[in-house]
Image (cartoon, rainbow, N blue to C red):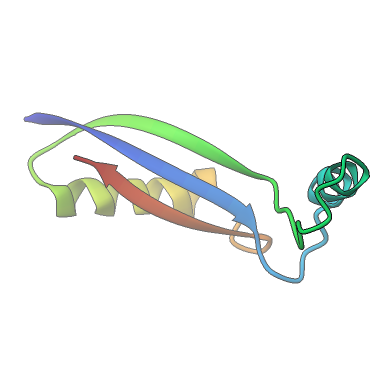
Length: 83
């Protein structure tokens, strides 16, 4: 079996208030970066996993995300495999 590195990014869904993101946006504006329109704070998980192929690995991480790692009511996620 091959060892794969998978990056799982989790962010609050659009429409869910992100107070941390708003705080960072306001701080950036106060520092002179007024061009920043929005900031969303999220989580990034780097997962090292064994698997036969990319499709199997993506499927397993997707299942982990849906069952345990992500709150489907408030969060969206994306998965990518580092090659």
